[in-house]
Image (tube, rainbow, N blue to C red; front, top):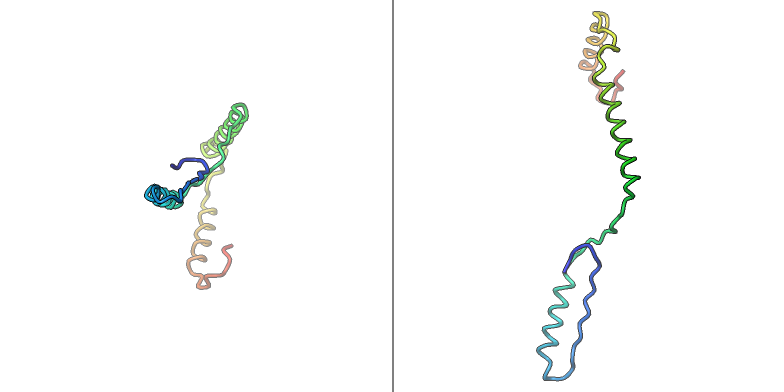
Length: 104
């Protein structure tokens, strides 16, 4: 028992004395089946054409991201003035005692 489906246990018990052992065995089995937990999930069929479009779109986005990261020729040089400005900002951040203060 188990898997990706809903499971129902139907047990039949006989009231005659000759079948009492079978009835008790059936009830015990039904109790054990009741303890089984399944997480049924709907199987989703994806349209292959839709999946291909989604994957192509993702590939294009990743290529654009890679191009932005690898394009070093378009970036401006980091000048001494930029370095000084960066040092000032870092020093101001490190000297700040108020933890709730915004970082500017």
